[in-house]
Length: 329
Image (cartoon, rainbow, N blue to C red; front, side, top):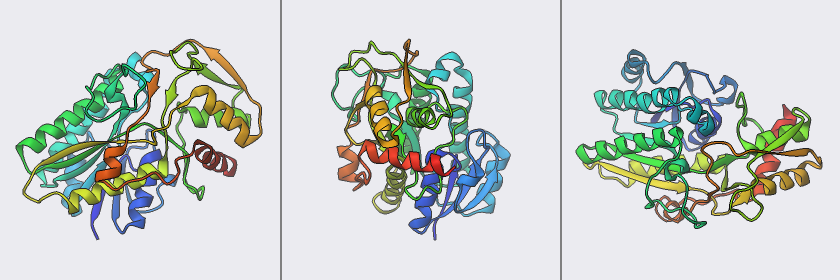
């Protein structure tokens, strides 16, 4: 049984990935400082309360456990907040990843799957689905910190036997179909759980930040991908590093993860009204800084090379799973 270190494994996507790792016969060591993660979301594996910026702790972990690979989630993710307060993002996302990579090199752990983001592409020039070869032009510090880590992974692979895959995903949505774990950000910033909070009465309304974008209904368009599909993609990427990359070779590659379908903010709100049966209020607000108008993935590369396909591609099903989790809580 291979042992995987999962920094940030108590977070939304991390906890679903830990569950997927368990299903596929891996052992997980979860490292999380619980600034955003939740212990109750970790269904399997061993939990260590700590931070990737703690060099001594990382050395202890690598000395204590025979770590075969790392799946790295630990990062701040709020793009708007990164514009207002960028330095914590560089400290946690970029310097933290550097500290982790240095520890991996010291202890000769040579495989990592990195949680990256579509934000590395910045503002697309047109409404075409994004492909991995596009220029990387982040328009906010969040995207810049993630791209900086990808650059490190690329450069390490070119100079050593280090092997890495960066997964650039779009908007994570949904919850575990069995409603065991779900989205628990505090404060919540993601659209679908915010919309469902409005439907449940937890908040008075949902705000639409920007209704004058160059899109058919004036609101931002995003590619939503079920969190369980994201989790399975991480396992596919890990298997690829173990089974398809020669031991003596360095390797780096990046893959988009999405459904290839774009839904506007207004469409998400209307779908949520249909799923919940609640006609909650939607309020128009000014644009937020750092929000691109259109982000939709071309995931053909992941389909072809990683043999990955979304199992839950429909927006309605993502919202149904998230609604079921919210009602169960």
